[in-house]
Length: 171
Image 1 (cartoon, rainbow, N blue to C red):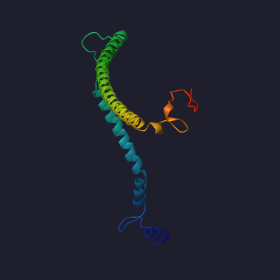
Image 2 (cartoon, rainbow, N blue to C red):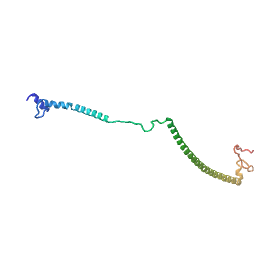
Image 3 (tube, helix red, strand yellow):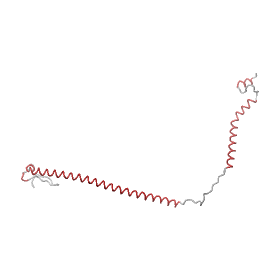
Image 4 (cartoon, rainbow, N blue to C red):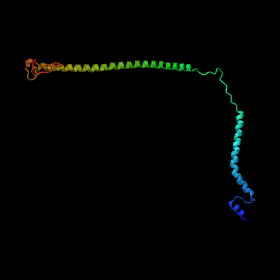
């Protein structure tokens, strides 16, 4: 065996029963160029499919039946203002009803509050009248005690008017 046969057999490039030389080199070249050839074949197939598909598709745009005019901006604005006026009218009616209901509730609450305050004031007034009656009865039953310290009973109790200063000297 010569050196070339041992090297090729040792690498495993050549299978058993294959002749030396071209068989191994042909497979290596094919393995090297196969991905490039496959990519080229796919690119050509894609371009061909695109050409066929684009030649058979037709797009036609036709205007709708009737005049092709754009909407008038002034008419759109009028419609929007009309819608806003209707909404405002509905809100105004609702606000009026709610304010009337609120006023009625406030009046009812104010009346109930006034009745409670009047009841408390009447109760206080009755208590003050009872206290005043008890003080008057006590003053009538003990005239000497009511005269005050250092005063004779004949002068009577010391009366102080509201806003006037109290003094021990008779007027």
